Amino acid sequence: MYFRLVLLLLMLISSNTVALARDSWIFHVVNRSSVAVKNFRTQENGKWSGNWIKGDIIRSGEKFEMDFGSSHGDCTVRTQITFTDGTYFDYDVDYCEVNVIVIREQKLTFE
Image (cartoon, rainbow, N blue to C red; front, side, top):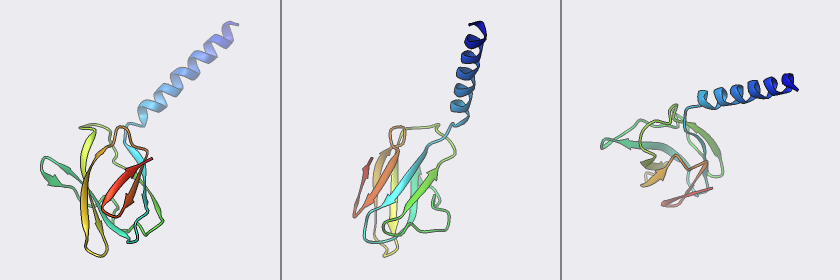
């Protein structure tokens, strides 16, 4: 009995350590628009970040994993989407709550 209790305690400590080590916003972006996405940028202190897609595009129908590398800061962040045809829009996203961002024509939805 004592052995099982110690084993359970070690498992709980281990799982909490793993959870703490994953200290970043990781989510998926799905492009359900009719045009490829070339830029996914976020705004901080009034300035837009570089492109989070890192030199690639998200074609119509594709899914892309995104990792900001951190979960610190404001949860709600203004996010700009730019398409390969030159059109773009920006939208407020609550990254503390999102698992999947779906890009549509001129708006974002969440799953």
